[in-house]
Image (cartoon, rainbow, N blue to C red):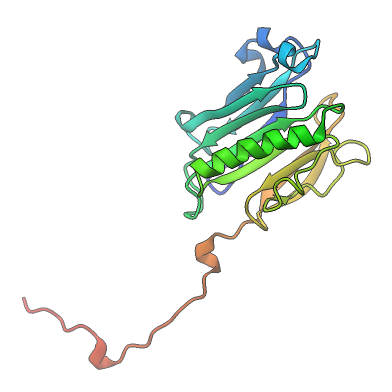
Length: 226
């Protein structure tokens, strides 16, 4: 799934899975993108019980967020889920958000969906307790799992098919009416389509009612003497 952070008006970066290979031995230069900061969480084959490598990567547009303001908060890998949570302080966000936290996940097809959702719930609950005013985004390949019951206060924005006739790749946010999804073709030989999520959020200050006051001549301040 792709979500570009192309400028100060964009609310989110891009998160996609690394190829299923011996990811730990792949140099950063082989997976980096120009003008993007790369945050990797290589797969622990022993912890997840898989023979092949791979993992997660988060790409953050440097025009959207200074690389020095990109910090890993949580990274975990087990049989049911791979999860990477990254804190971001971009150059601009609506004032109601202190910063952004992006959580990238991969849930294998044979994983215990309930156990995977519990891991996400625990991670997000911890992050929201520590950072109650943060914009929280959760994205990745969920396969057969959803967070509809686990995080009922979050809103899911991908409403198009991402693999064949199924919607496996999802994106949740802790704000309503924040994005609109547009399907895009798959990247290279990937079997999942890309999804562009365009920001549709209206900052709180623009949603407040406008108030006016009429001032009479007597209510105007008197000019000071020189």
